[in-house]
Picture (cartoon, rainbow, N blue to C red):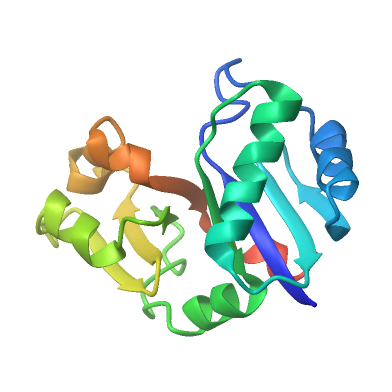
Amino acid sequence: MEKYIALLRGINVGGKNKISMPVLKNAFIENGFSDVSTYINSGNVLFFSKSKDKEKLQAECRRIIMEKFGLNIAVMVISAQELSDALDHAPKWWDTDTESKHNAFFVIPPATAESLIESVGDENPEYARVSHYGQVIFWSAPIKTFTRTSWSKAISSKVYYNITVRNSNTTKKPLVV
């Protein structure tokens, strides 16, 4: 059995795509996942599965959400080990400056981190820093100027449909829950 985290994109934001975390947890349990828990209301589901096929797990998570809530939600599934590896390889500047925002953009397959970074283009180093490891893109930008960054603008572009975003605290927490 391996531990996974399902990261749901765009739920419980601004009153849209409402999903109750206790109901979501029970839906995962009812569908054969074990040791299921959720972390905060933004759609982080931790579970164990015998399957090692993340593509099938991603499809299964989407099916559960569609059947239980009637929502066609994008889901990124990452193993706890992959997340741990990504955080071990996070750039030294990520999540260190208290005057900056620090986010992780989780890339939803079949998109890749490389293709999305290329699509967004180079970031002005005066405004932000970007790096990636696997399917996780690390981004940091000063709070005063983050709206000028390419990645803050990407949230309102077609790139948004290929990512789900978590702040640094929410990115790290599933490994200790």
